[in-house]
Length: 190
Image (tube, rainbow, N blue to C red; front, top):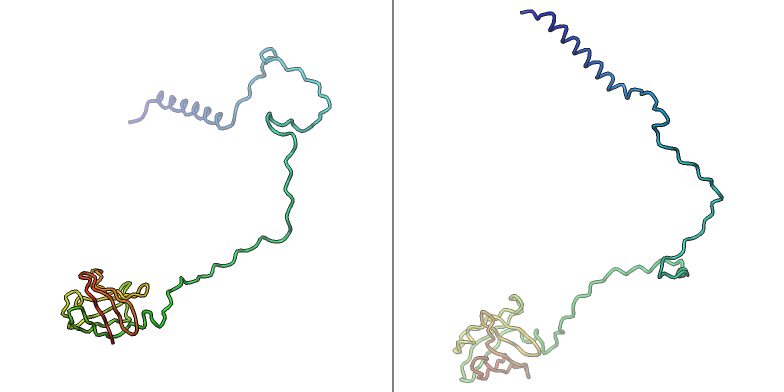
């Protein structure tokens, strides 16, 4: 169905009006007539200028007016360079002829009751101790020995779990001491 002529004319008039507004908006601001001088604020009278001088400001209250001295430059030599740290391993206890290495091997153990057995002290590590074994020991505690250590001139025999079975001292090619639980004497010879 064709549109009535009045609707078409109205659409064209609206399009022309919008086009005029759009073009005026994008063309920039419109020029306005200058306002009369009376509407402007009164002009500020010019202040005569004189010579300009400068000087340092006074120090703030409580501050010294004397400038702090600048420390003298020591020398033009470069600062010392720190040396690369050198790894030094911690000292280990010396193994002397009467030390740990001298007790490694097989021993014949004899307790206070006269019972004898074989005790072997190995140089193989077992955590922070050394492996040991006992065979044919009538003493139940001595038969459970599985580890040993040498500290402060003494041989310590251990059971599983870290229980000390015996403490022995070196003397004249033998080890003499006592069982920890009973306090009974124990000696070991090669």
